[in-house]
Length: 187
Image (cartoon, rainbow, N blue to C red; front, side, top):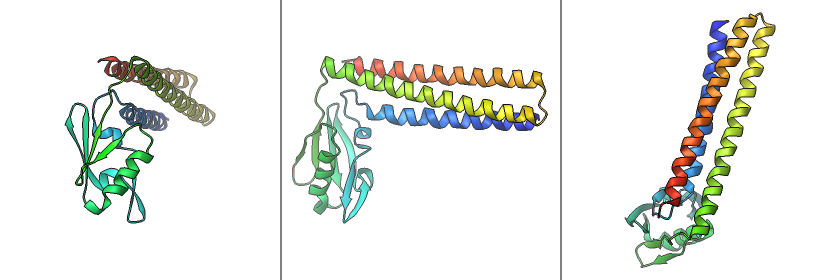
């Protein structure tokens, strides 16, 4: 029975790690007014008839704290890359200089910063819900083990361990959200 419980714990930890990794990816998309290539991570480009992620069709670099440069691998694709950035609906206006796109990242207003913090908190809450759903699944597996002969004491210990892992995951989410909030609100 101990091996089965360890498998339940490992599955639960793995599911929580996936939820936290997803949250981390979503928080990267919440821009803090600083130029970062990760801002363009969701941009797709029509690369000779195939929708391709931008990073596979162009180099994305930071020129300074407020400017990104996007240089397509094939200069003939410059207009398609520009179209992809505009269509991504990120609120960015790329400028074409003939060789690359130059994207100025506008300074964030106080109101926009608060909206971004709300968005980050909503993503954090979604992650906590996912962790709680993972907890429910793990507890269901423990109940199935009880039907297969798991002792009452081991079941209580397993429930306690699963709750501890849930609390740890929730505190990691809170830490990530606090860090992002500080990043966004810092001018």
